[in-house]
Image (cartoon, rainbow, N blue to C red):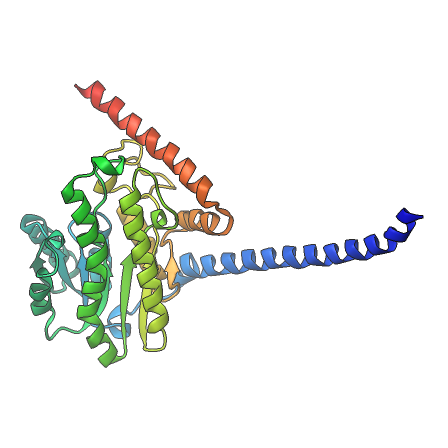
Length: 325
């Protein structure tokens, strides 16, 4: 008798659960379709159209950390599209070399600004002088540092600590502050901030790097919301591993593959996404990683597996060092 009395109620509850389940499945499918559409638009559809960067944004591009890796490739890719380049980095010989390569290959103007971002606030007065009277169309906030290899925080040096603060964190709003007023006056421009997939969740053994890249992501995302109706494009790039000098501690990460592209491959993909995605990995394979981490990731599991991964990289590095002795 009691069971029979409960059955009608259970039937209604089962119906309600079915409806809730269908709604949830529909939501998941719509999110997946939307993510695939956005990814296709950013990484493939964008390649079908010519980028008139000078007309769209302005004559000059400023690239920080431009003498190696991602920064150098951004400078070359923007010059390839007709933009003059302000090269901002710390090593004169490398600046001269990159400047010469760009002028000879792409027949554009360059200007060199030799500063070390680790020196902090006072360098920006010098940078500002070089940017005066220039129509800055694109700023690429690329300059960054990383621990020389995975390690516990106590082993990081004072230089590592303040390098992360002054280079990874302070440079992004400070450089943005220099170029933003001119962009607002003209009603056009683009600011590209290089964050990292490492900033999505805390990253054990690379904790300070992860934390500074989370700052870049948050600041950039906020900036994009504030100025989305101003004619200015603010783009956040969240790459995973790229085969550059920043990962030279690992022979594994130095070998390019689908998941670890060269800087040239990465930037040739990323530059196409400008104007098609406000927040993107910049590279299709990294896009899958970011999507999985954000939509299905668990912070504890992300931290646990990355702790294991960084521990493995550290052991592998030490093994290679012992062999080379």
